[in-house]
Image 1 (tube, rainbow, N blue to C red):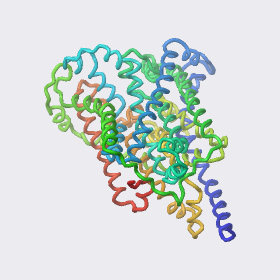
Image 2 (spheres, rainbow, N blue to C red):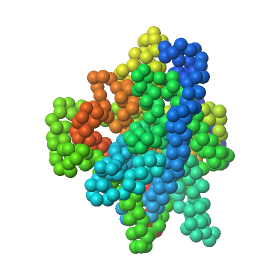
Image 3 (tube, rainbow, N blue to C red):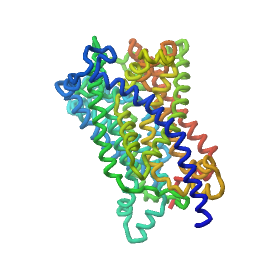
Image 4 (cartoon, one colour):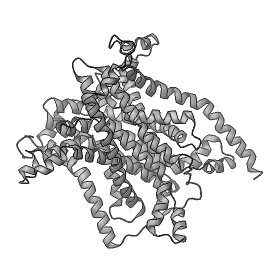
Amino acid sequence: MTVLAPVRRQAARSSRVLPAFGMPLFWILLAAFILVPCACFLLLAVSPRLFDQGSQWFTLTYLQQSLTGATAVAITNSLWVSAAAAVVGVAFGFPVAWLAARTTMPGRHLVGGGMWLALLLPSWLPSLGWERLVQPDGVMYRAGLDWPWMTHLIMGPFGVTLLLGLRCVPFSYLAISAALGGLGQEFEDAARTHGASRTQALRLIIPILAPAIMSALAIGFAESISDFGVASTLAYNSNFSLATYQLYAAIGNFPPSFPLAAGMAWLLVAAVAIPLALQARALRGRSYEVLSGRTRQAVRRHLRPAGATVTSASTALFFGVMLGVPAFGAVSGSLLGDYGSSFTLTLANYRALFAQPDMLAPLERSGVYALIAASVTVVIGFTAARLLSAKRRTAATGTLDFLLLASVALPSVVFGAGYIFAYNLPIMSTLHIDLYQTVQLLVIAYIASSLPTNARVLSGSVSQLQPSLKDAARAHGAGEIVAWARGVLPVVSRPILMAWLYTFCGVFLELPLSQLLYAPSEPPASIAIEDNLSNYHFGVGMAQSVFAVAIAFAAVGVALGAYRLLAPAGWRRIGGTIRG
């Protein structure tokens, strides 16, 4: 103890010195690329004249309008639907993550790929698939199934909640499976040693996973309340108004009402206080540091033939519902020459796609943008996750927590509008900051919009880290960076890779920000797809979507394969399991 004391004091001093240089830069970046753009747009609601959008220097009119009429109905619908969707996401995501990580369920190695495929699909694609299946002249009726009740069920609040809930499942799966990777076997063994059954042992383990579960709920709520794909397709066609579409209508109408959209944005940002308060109350005063150098690999539970059959069949049915319909919508849309009335399969859409000049250029741009954005985001996201998981809850930590979660809840179309207002101000030209309509601003917006969810995905795993991981390396003479690389990086390498892939996938086919901020001469993949879909080339657009998703999914496979082949064996064993 006496020998290690000077080393620990030196490590504590160095850990205090680094934040002295790094933390101001961290907060400057957050302020410049998240706080300022969002604040500029939100200020429109109370001071439209500040941005030449009205005559009032101060007014509450637009906030009042947001609380009345159709906007109030839309916001109310978004609140309860998003809460229900977040619960649905955890209800399905937790058991799937547990079965894949802790049992010998057949096909468990395919679960991760299925979740990543679900993340790759834009949210409007499942909506179109379901609509085509149940609409009065859709596939179900043409197959002789005259079920009006199914049409009314899906084309309504239940269908909207179902689709948004299924959209939340991959977020819950990633957050919970990453936390399960750091949960060793010793806790379950201790419970079983004292006579607990497997069910009772699970009741002991679930509270340890509280940070990941709460993060999954917060992510699900915020992602659902800010989703535009479902709101503009299934919800709109079902006459079920959601806030994001009302925002879009306020901005897209002629003349546009940016102050009214900003007033609605205020209410959406305020709504994130609900999951934030629940998360803070659940985690206050508790420690979840369970990952240390003595953590033992978990033992997979061997399933009997009946159990293996039931679990694998249930999981297959779940993926069939979550992915089967979207896949059918995309593939059938790309293979049908006449989308409205004919079922004749043809490759004409793919031939037309590959005949287009510069067909690969948008995909290449999106790949480069996603690579840069994911690499930068994961570094900043790890720093933010470390602050969020700190034992001592400071005012700065609380501010960061609300800022990041509020940024998730802010719809991308509003986030992009904030960048337009912030970086098109005259003061920016005076400061020689000419970023408007440049690739640089688009990539910065990708990073800023991806950071909040990235930090949330990492927070469950980062909260499990014990200081002893780095202290052990420091005790053997390693410097600060080397100690982190040797003691901390190996145990969080898998969650970091997953967070990187999640950001890469999200940026690759991102639409709202791209639509508002892309450089006119350099459209990314999502803009090229949108151009085909909106210019009466629906089949070609769907073919381009299928091709883009295939490329993105191949990139995920390459990254996971490279980690499996190149990462040290010890890194791969951390968070792994052994068969019991």
